[in-house]
Length: 114
Image 1: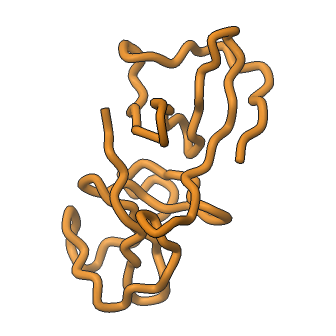
Image 2: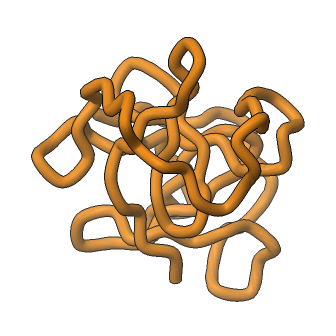
């Protein structure tokens, strides 16, 4: 799933300040809660990490969250990068997607940074 991001004046690549993540056979960049893919022609596509066996969207109430204390709540400005995943937003914590859900956070699988 993707669409073109209009009026994007930043060039993403290995030397930009945004976190690169492996997404299928290419690298995308996390930028303000979006997953940006630079095309060869300079256009930027909005990508989403697909819900899959590797990155499920299931509830995992027994997941023991690493990378933050038990009282941490994910959300805007929580200190973890937001990642679009399926129809929701997860947060990148120590190479895994965490999703806030009630009184716990769900493990939505690994995300490899490059």
